[in-house]
Length: 89
Image: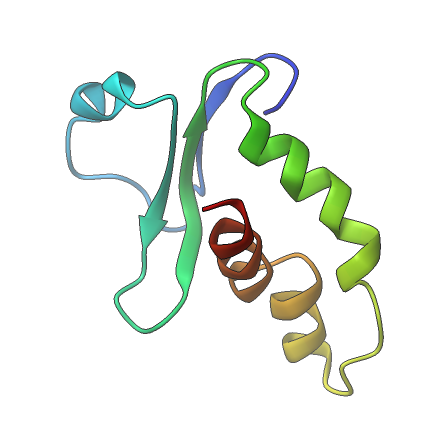
């Protein structure tokens, strides 16, 4: 995502709307509406600093959270993405 830029769609969720309006933004993520961002639809232009922040934060957030699903969400999933988004902004 950082190097080439891209739009990522999580195929088990799909997309029912046109993403063309999102192309106006240099980076976008999906708001889950329940406190955390979602990582189902993501997009960015090449070299966007948010994705540099994401990759830089991976090691900092990687530790044992106890339960596997919680570990995934906080170490590299939706809660991780939300925390880094807040730090970035």
